[in-house]
Image: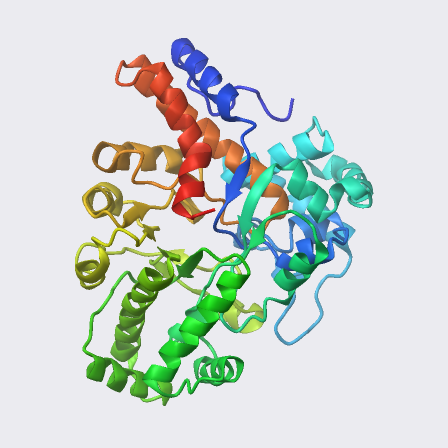
Length: 467
């Protein structure tokens, strides 16, 4: 047996029985995936995935960062380089290398997601190993050639009700247009991620501003024109279903500058005269500006600060961003968010969803903030903490102050398409286990726990993200 039916449930028999009952009521609910990074091209073109390595290994930094940490070169995993230099092209060789190192994932959430996928989609009952690597490869490869494993068929098989991809303001959204023109009924929406034209430290920032102006017809070298360009692109994204914006800043700092001070700051960052403090202040001001626009147009705002991006300079130089070298850092929220919350924290038509990579902030800062400000909700344990223990700690440290209903359920935040149902299944099981503990310690009645389990698995995400 590759996956146990009681995985992640409590050891105590009474609590386990409650968890089983709760899970039975939600395991087949549709998936709301409001924050992710799957490729919209998959749904637009609906072409078969080419091979197991390209599907499982090459796009998934959870996998290749672990292998890299143990001395496996990214080139040997087929990861494309920025300059187009030679990398491994044989997908079977990549797969064998992956299988030879599968033991590295013992005890990790990646292992749980992969085993779930291997068992439920491909019928495997034995753990992946060097001895069965070719058998695994051949069965998966054969399945990928069938109509049932094309992206749209999998979308329906996974019971995905809605999924959001994430694009920059510079993206033409051509794949979303193809989806719309195709007549397919799957709901794939975009989300507005303005980092390339908001972060002065983003590579190519000044060129990005110029391109931003070309796309929108606005003078993006003036403060007023730059803000108008954002309004235009946000409206364009909403035409393709966007209900949210997404902001990945180094810190949670916000600012509320006067118009003249903001204009002077923009002049410095747009001409390349800004230092590190100006760059940080500009990002801070733009979070408040984006909040103001969300009050105007109703888009939900997400902030996920605290990642030291591209920490490995050698990897960034050779392979680019999103190569598994983003590292969590300590993050402060109470003072950092106050300028934004002073303006918009009490707005009834504004929703700000906060994420963190700093677990120490859960009970000290995030839960008290979300437990007070009407506009604030807490995103789930994610990225480095979308693991059973991380999810459990999130519930333990936030529920006592923020409750369940100042959180937004679960999102999978994945580039690995086949991991989506596995990730949601883990979250549902962990939440059922947590709720079972409340029931068996007589802090929650079981009928209430059934309602909460449903809300965490489905309703809260659907409502918070306006999907």
